[in-house]
View (cartoon, one colour):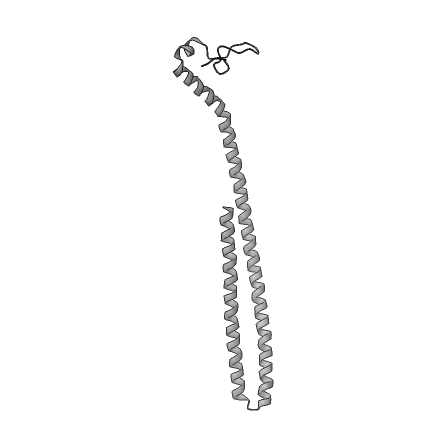
Length: 164
């Protein structure tokens, strides 16, 4: 899940940046078209070459300032949007980590429960197998271990030294 989330987040950030770059190019084109229109309008109104050159420089300078200002605003907007997206993504990753911890704890709890029951299940399986393989042994001997201390018990087939 973490890997998928990171891949999705990387794709989201990439899409955000690509969209921002596309929007920036679009704005630059519009501003350039506006600059050219202003120059064309100025040329139609002004016939003096010196005045045209001076006005053209003023238009170009104001164009540069406008482009810088617009790009700065777009960059700030992108940074805010990216920051919000990254915060959202970090919260998502944290939620996944919490879910992972919860699932691990549940798996551990289930494992421990199964391990506790496994000993009894193995003993029951061994008894069942012994009854099937040695019916006379199972009928003659009681199921509880003998009270012998420290010695091998003849009644406990698991600890008996025989060639069974």
